[in-house]
Length: 100
Image (cartoon, rainbow, N blue to C red):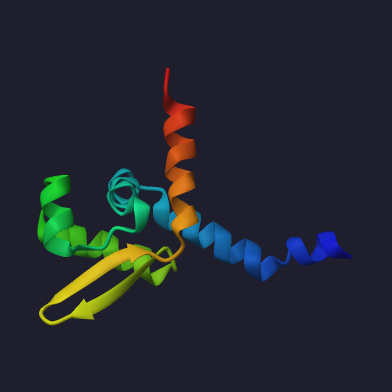
């Protein structure tokens, strides 16, 4: 009975949706730049990644819409951060799995 709860289809769908959102090189890089509770603006992230600000905003929107990131408005700036800090472990795992 407990195993059925853990494999609830709605939770599995949500998990798959989050993983699909993360499954892009730039989005993985975004998560890396938000590790450790960091909050960054679109401008900061686009400068770190070296990509267009509109492209950065697009990727941030996808991650936010799928529950990976949260955003907080402070004056003129919107700061993005990991919704769950434990998500950085996914990035750590991927780094470990892709090292030679």
